[in-house]
Length: 180
Image (cartoon, rainbow, N blue to C red; front, side, top):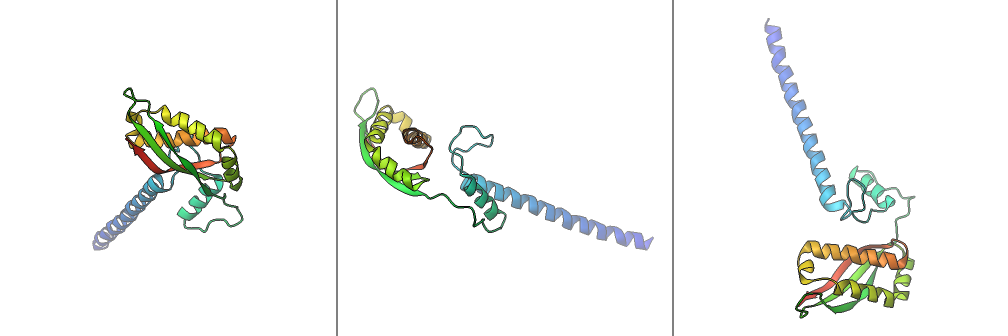
């Protein structure tokens, strides 16, 4: 009878250790998932695959998955060339009722192909016109929140991709943003 009493405490000790290891693994995976969600995922990307924004390039998502798994990224897969293109500063009147507010915006766009830089420069008048029309249709209330600014970035990228004919604009960065 003494042998069975001693075996039971050892079993509960092993059970506690296994339970602690399982809890630690769950916490670690939850931390990795939240890190991916807030730091590595593309802004606006949805889990359902809808049209919530630009989806990352397959090569980039494979490299990110390999990096998060601790493996080295595949070297035989070419990474997309990324270039930044500065757009000229634009100043427009906002579409407020009083008509006394204006917006001054400087932007840089990140493109996924080197030839997109040449295409953006070749279409500069058309791009500037599209941006002026888009910006002048906005009100102060639409642009005063961070969500409004993010929506404006997405709209600018969409208009530029429409002009270029293919989705080559990856991100839009505001280098200057003044509303007065």
